[in-house]
Image (cartoon, rainbow, N blue to C red):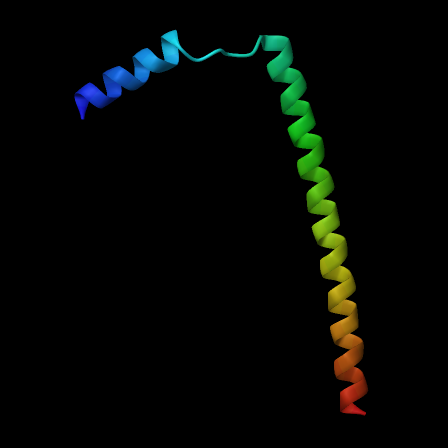
Length: 62
């Protein structure tokens, strides 16, 4: 287990190409914006389906 952790740390330190700070900030904003858009779309679809189901059950009740 210790060997695995040492090798993982070495891999991250020597072989992974990390983005610059500016690029990391830009990509973070992109991810945040798309996450908000996806959440709003999911909320919208949920509201529409809830309304349709509510109308359907009211129609069945009558």
